[in-house]
Image 1: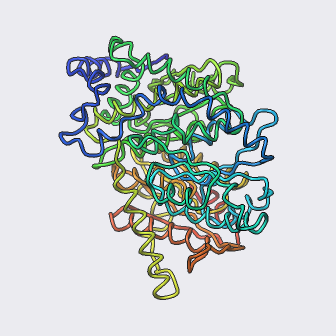
Image 2: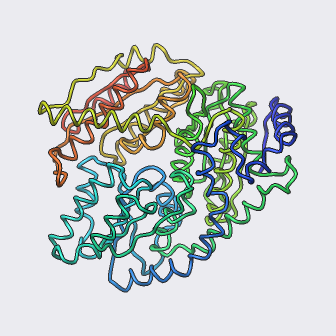
Image 3: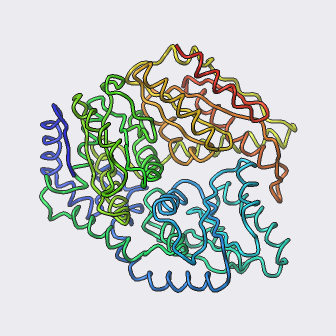
Length: 538
């Protein structure tokens, strides 16, 4: 770990000294809830991630045997149906490590947009596809609806008597999903330790089952995590404790106004940002405080950045780093605080998972919040349910008006704020390119950080921060028509209507809190409106 914190070195050192005086690291390992809050509620039962590597190492042989079983059964695809912490870790491992030779291909489906569901349907052969239904609570609406849909697809291919063999559950014990798995004779149910929250679950079954199924060496991944775990242990001097140091830097600089944690990565591990984004945003964004993770933002000239940034560069040795190294060098030379985290190989992702979990818990203690709850995620779910209730009662979704035009939204732009682009449209290379260009131009023009979340995935990631965090966000919704829709089996609505209800429910939740919101709607998938936004920016 290398750092150039400039004038903040002494402040971080003072924070570390304070953590040492109060034995914070030792108390975290003792699961002392007073590190964060006076009451133990939703803390003492959420610290299983500290020791999960010990238990999961014993499960590795069984996971390897299950992977052999799946290969032997002829499955060519594994489709993970999950949201947030139930899917993002697997997505990182899929993109960074990929499938080993002879193993199935992993597809992560974390969207209710009918175009996304249809794209998966057209890619797979249902008879030879294994579906992982992932939900800690067993009640998350997206995997519930998606599993119903694909169960009907599978039964159409293999018959209702055999459909259960194409499904696997990952959930806590005694949840509705666990009960369903037994009743419907799923091929397997992996019951996760109940004391691990979703966004801290990547080194548990939620990350390791899909990893094993595509041939990732789970034992090696856990060993790298265990090495970092030892570097965060209570016996390590506070200044040398990797997790305490990173957490102190994150928390201290956020308190000093540098709360835009800008993550830059080597190309091969770019997907790690999606996982960090959820971990940091959902853990710290509450009580009007929080750290805003900025992930995937195009790199700019140093003069285009304000004084609200902390740059963290996750650098993979041997990757194509020349361009990124040069950009980070310029940013460092301009006086911006920069931390470089070195990875020796891609399996060091295991180490990074644990490092960031520990650091985020320490940053939460510094900010005085409970990093293990997500109260505003529930409010978004309730808003969606109200929207769907309106549809059932009246045959249409209620109208929700944005508070601003895009031009008036940007009249509020300045350093210290951030623009969150919330896109309920089918993700393609072209939409990525256009939205990236929009981010680049806004960030350069206003010296303001930008974020991008595709809905409804971001509801289980940055949604908590948007509502519970600092009141510095400007929100742009990008919605679109559904060229083709799909039914949700057993429900009076379609996937398109569910996605629309999620978008409108979130928009309503933000406007009710006085957050500034604009919306553009793309008719028939026409992306020209985004191009016009970019062209009209001064």
